[in-house]
Amino acid sequence: MGEIVLSDVRKSFGGVSIIQGIDLTIKDGEFVVFVGPSGCGKSTLLRLIAGLEDTTDGIIAIDGRDATRLPPARRGLAMVFQSYALYPHMSVRKNIAFPLRMAGMPAAEQDRKVEAAAKVLNLTPYLDRRPSQLSGGQRQRVAIGRAIVREPSAFLFDEPLSNLDAALRVSMRQEISELHQSLKTTMIYVTHDQVEAMTMADKIVVLNAGRIEQVGSPLELYKTPANLFVAGFIGSPKMNFIEGAEAAKHGAHTLGVRPEHIAIAADGPWKGVVGISEHLGSDTFLKVQVDGMGPLTVRAGGEVELHYGDAVSLAAQPGKLHRFDAAGHTLSA
Amino acid sequence: MARHVSNSRKAVVTALAWGIGLLIFFPILWTILTSFKTEGEAINSHPSFLFFDWTLENYHTVNERSDYLGHFWNSVVIAVGSTLVGLLIAIPAAWSMAFVPGKRTKDLLMWMLSTKMMPAVGVLVPIYLLARDTGLLDTKLGLVIVLTLVNLPIIVWMLYTYFKEIPGEILEAARMDGASLGSEILYVLTPMAVPGIASTLLLNVILAWNESFWTLNLTAANSAPLTAFIASYSSPEGLFYAKLSAASTMAIAPILILGWFSQKQLVRGLTFGAVK
Image (cartoon, rainbow over all chains, first blue to last red; front, side, top):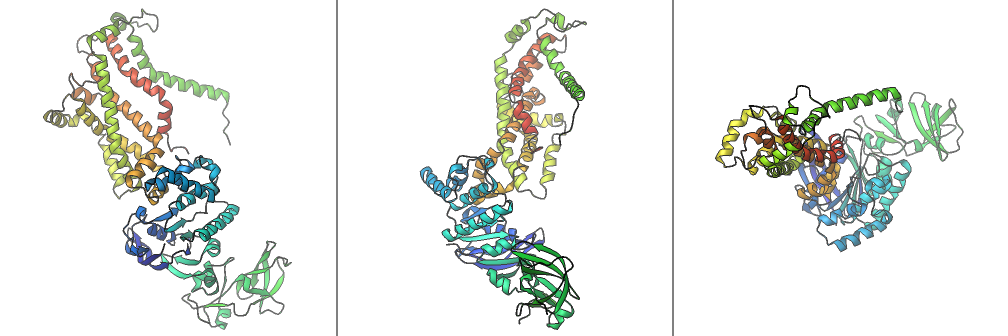
């Protein structure tokens, strides 16, 4: 079990409102990612759910029980921190066993559970080392091990991969996804990296300035963003925004089109000159200066031979234009 | 890049450091030397440094006249007792100031320290009367209480600075792992702060060992520690320098030895957090 329901949850620090009324239901077994720019309140929201911060107003219910005023220890949740927060004076074994020891479990059973968790996480050879003798990825696995032995009703991850290098981040990302598949436990994951959000989540919650901008599956957010903010935040590279005459032609204040939805076409309506081109092998990203519209990012095939100063004409793929009104809301098609 | 330091400069710095070290150590050395002289030699207007008739007479006399072991035991109980009680109070206090600071935490710390700026004699009369009326005058318990209170601000301050260096996330992790406040302090915070706590303990034992204002004013015969033992050899008429020196040497020897063996720990503690 691990259903978490937030009703009008608010948090302010000394009169400054950080979380401004969040309503959200996280179903049992769901992998939910809170994503947003730094300072949007995503970590604070996670800490409110964990109980590490006091909720100013609203109700946090865990498994149908009001947990708003419960101390963290009694909420049945486990958390993995950005800095791993391992106990430096304890061996890996003792680190993982710590929550069991706090729960008063007999030593023999503690050992059995620690061994089992270590096996799952490939930590068996390191059980008697100190955290300082481990690499970043191993430390992260210890932190995860410490979380899973408790069999919590939900896992909370606070930007757990941001201290790792790029390659390790990708493999740890997959490990966490696999862990979710095998445990089927609710996970709430905070990140500022929309790629992590897109690749891992069942449901993404996009936060901005203490409010939810949109909730949905990765593809829903990608295909039908509710507003300019979500449109700009989800997708890499970022969606192109066009204002002025071209947007007015489509009856919108702002027109949005993703780089991958622009085609290089000999008779395309948008004429421009190639600026920077980034050749990645699989893809080529072109920065095209289009007359009367400004720069557009275009994703072209990997073997496109276009270089600085070449003239191109572009066309948006039919049905892939996003239209927004002056307030930034999506206009229905 | 390592800065290049020439050998001659190294030599100058080393000589300077030794010079300052010897300057600081000299009075102690002189006391120790004097304790082996005869009274006559001790007040000789042309004192000899090493070439005098070494004698243990002063030590014999001092041991005959006073109960060194009794005073020593009093010192141990008072210094260690007041430090342990102080730590017991200061660890939770420093925890709350370091990890759940309020608006007034800084002011509170300053205020605590400010009590150390007041001359102790300013509160001598009220404390003396309190001790007398509660029957704590000339008892070890009374001195433990007074010295705990006197040194508490320093203990709290030192622990506070050590605790500040410990990342709060680790304590939060303990809370998420189901640790109660007591377990969090006992199993996570305290072991992580061991170097800091150890140096606080050592420094405070030294401070309490050497404390002489309260120990002299609140004791007579029963609970007099080594400070009172030394003082009993400084009489207003006709000083007995050699015996005074012998008493002083015997009083500082234990703490000197303790300091010598724990100097690594002390230095590490005092610079804890200054360098990563």
